Length: 320
Image 1 (cartoon, helix red, strand yellow):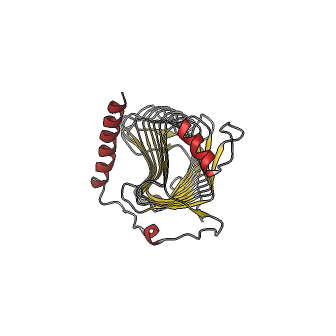
Image 2 (image 1 turned 90 degrees about the vertical axis):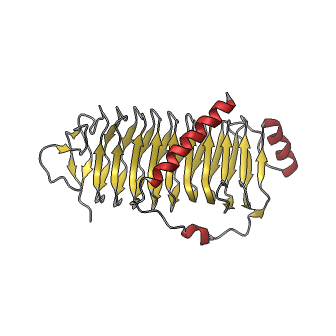
């Protein structure tokens, strides 16, 4: 089973990365973060890379390192205040069920395959208030559930990667100068809320994922804002600001269905504010639709694309 999952993940990754080559006309972010050194608090303690392989290993390292907490939800084991620069992953966590919080750390790896935090086959892992600079993913959560990433500042090729996940949450993060701000692959019942996602190739990109909630994010100044493809269903996209992306603000391909959208502010996106090539998507909630910079105050708003979708209750968005 593990081998099968690894093979599928490799195939999915190959498809996603190959899609970049098909979109060379889009803006590819430069890498200012590679030469960026955000200020590191003097109180942070330099530490080597951390690898945790199971609960027993976590408890043993916690005892050796003096990490506080007993691993319960109310008192998680706390990895706090470290400055880690590594040629590989900075922090790797596998097969853990004990509650753990990685908090207020500075993590940097220039390895093209290196990750700031790599979590796999685990639950109850939280990454909070960290600064992460990575040659690959800032935070990768794979084959895991009930994990949280919040209030981090991330510069990476893929800011936050949720793959084979369930009940994952990311809120309050700043993700910029990435190829993918967020990449969501085969991940269900998860939430992306109140993040600033800017100056990326894709703000949020997803394949084969269901029942996710995207709300109150600022997704601006990317090449593409949100793109869903490859059988994404039953999402709610609510209250986001999607402005000044050079391509399309929100795009659905032919296998995307039953997405509900309302209260989003879509404006000044270069190619189109939206494109719907899916089916049975709902661009209003029956009372309120979305705000559009190219709607001028009367009638319905027709969404470009083969779905021939309509926002029945649009409002004009005045950007100024």
